[in-house]
Image 1 (tube, protein in one colour):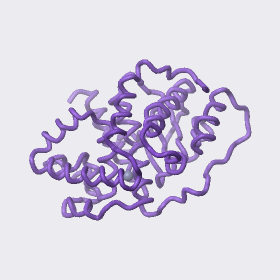
Image 2 (cartoon, protein in one colour):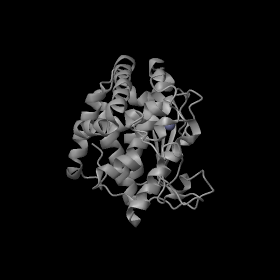
Image 3 (cartoon, protein in one colour):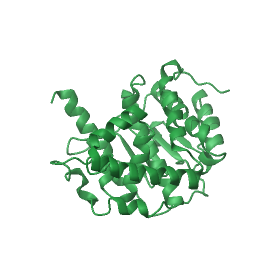
Image 4 (cartoon, helix red, strand yellow):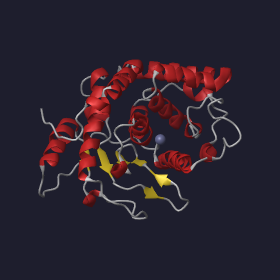
Length: 297
Ligand SMILES: [Zn+2]
């Protein structure tokens, strides 16, 4: 393994690890606004965030250093202004607007996580891994390493930022409306709990019917990991994954996806294939987007 690959591997491990912080126990109280508006000097970007994020979706998009309120274990660096602008435009373009195309009116306003916080640096763990994203109870998502944001590589954007967002958002959905217990039965004897990180050293989680190692932790993680991966993977690449999973693995993945598709349609009026198309179409046109400037229409 060359240095770059090792770094990538460490990052991959880390982004999954941090999802352990997900708290699935309590249903979030979506009726109470968690936003407090601070008085201070606001610039054009603040006004944009106020209008596009807060007024439209009740989302508090935090990028200033004073917003870094948690994780004092880490030495954190604030997000660069220019990269914060890019990320705000990106989240709107690749996530919010994609859901808007396919979801019923009022869906995002009601259910999307209420806080997105940007941090410039990665957070380094003692074991040398890097934290790229964390979420607290599905309500607040922190995206790290914003100062190394590369908007030209969609796969990296998916892996380091957007799958975290889609993962957490999907937790809110199943915490609000349960999915069928038939899903739990498919891999019931194969979930490994906290051992997910070591459990697949000598075997393939994919061949066991898990889209990622982290999926094998428990049912809810499996459920949201599948959604996050499916909507960020082209049909061709998905078929390649199924092939790689082998006969048994692909059979399990197909069974799980069938339940997810019907759940999203029945419970949320969302066609997951249309959502995937919306995201992938947007990703394809990403280079044409002006992510550097704030536009208030
Ligand atoms: Zn999770």
